[in-house]
Amino acid sequence: MRLGSATAILVSSFVVGVTVPSDAAGQTPTFTRDVAPILYKNCSQCHRPNEVAPMPLMTYEQVRPWARSIKSKVLKREMPPWGVGQSSLHFSNDRRMSDQEVATIVAWVDGGAPMGKLADMPPAPEYPGGWKFNRAPDVVLRMPVEFQIEPRSEYPMLDFYVPIPWTDGMKLIQMSEARPSNKAVVHHITVSLVTFPPGTEVIDGQPFTTDASGKKVPLDRRTARITEQKLPSDMQIPREPGEKPDRLSSVGGFTTLLAYVAGRGFDGHPDGVGTPALPGQYINFNMHYTPTGRPEVDRSELGLWFAKEPLRKFHFRTPINERQHVNGKLVRGSIPDAADVEAGRVSQGATPTTISSFSGLPPIPPYMADYTVTSELAITQDITINGFYPHMHVRGKVAEYRVAYPDGREQLLFEVPRYRFDWQERYVLSEPLKIPKGSTLKYRAVFDNSANNPLNPNPDKEVYWSEQSWDEMSLGWIEYTLDKQRLQKR
Ligand code: HEC
Image 1 (tube, rainbow, N blue to C red):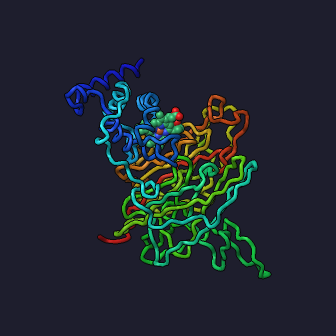
Image 2: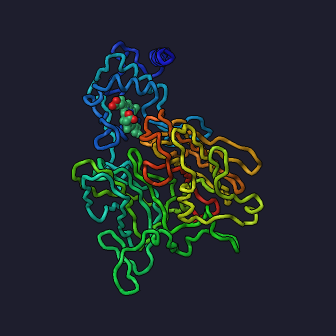
Image 3: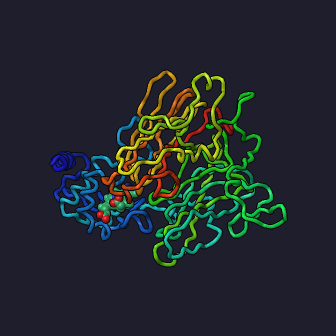
């Protein structure tokens, strides 16, 4: 009932209101004049051919059969999807429509969903080559082989490596998008930058090294992960004398660029900010395929957009996971106190162990509805946060970010009250958020292993921690830049 009266108010304010022409024919909004511009702006990025949504909503013929369903979804604010609940921040990718836009759609449906004059139809939005950003990528890389997916039960994660194709020095990757060629089988893609040890040979996308007896043997992937990347000297992170790279400021040899899951798979950073990538490095496509029961092939691709001059800063990301409590009990980790931070004695460097350290958490008991992991990260440098990416699997229910400032003030950043594994979101800030050295970032993740969770395949199982989607993960990522870094003066 509440919904009904809200509609009435919205509709009447619309009818009395601003945009409705006074002639009788204009009383009901038309598709071509009033509704198409709203759908193009708010829906077309997903509701177009070959995109994530089940049906395109580009033409009158495509939209008309869905009119009632569209009215209901926009009134309930289920479409466009948007996960943030309480928040003290604003997001540039906030998809919520204005009340006015919702009212226009509702009035159009209630008025019989007329088409209107063809001449009123706006030009369709352009997505060059189907890419999410409105210009073609600077570089497109494809997986080195077309991979055949047999109709068997499951596949392990598979790695393919492609060399960086440019030769003219370091570039900052400001935006990237990963696209499967066969959406039906690609469960997810993680794209990373890797530096191999000297002497590595890559054949058909697989790295080999030479063992003591001179025989070619496959290279262990972990070796590739931890090799330090060599930055040009003028690109090094500025440090005080004696200061060591720490958790927040080290440039690892294995840098994740982005992750593709249904609905996601493109990342962008502010102007002049990006992930440094050098000739000699490799792009790693880490592929998770889910067979369909038929033989399938896939050759996924990656579009890269470079930051333009003036280059400003490196893009960094890290999960909040130095110190963790489960259901209020400390399970792991030490966090440096203020004196340690002041003295530059900080605990950990960014290594693969810290990245995957969610695996140190105790398993989630069967049927437990509110398994809560709270994690903290000491901020040892002045940083500026540009975005967040909370990641859990099917038992993930709630995610929340907070900050405690050095003066003790604590602030809710935002919460995602109904996290959905099948609808993961990266939350990009419209105003970057400065976090001073000496603060602590806090991330709370709640998991529901009960039978009330509709996505839970086995509530009677104890749930372990790993990258497989039937296990769990608890990663509250932040994306940030270092305030002290300045690559070029204007
Ligand atoms: C970010 C991507 C995205 C955007 C933007 C988006 N949708 Fe959707 N929409 C989806 C996906 C995915 C589904 C199917 C899964 C689901 O229902 O969650 C869906 C489902 C729907 C459905 C239900 C289809 C069914 O099978 O019942 C309707 C209606 C709908 N969308 C309308 C809209 C309208 C209208 C807009 C814009 C005002 C919009 N959507 C914007 C992704 C999107």
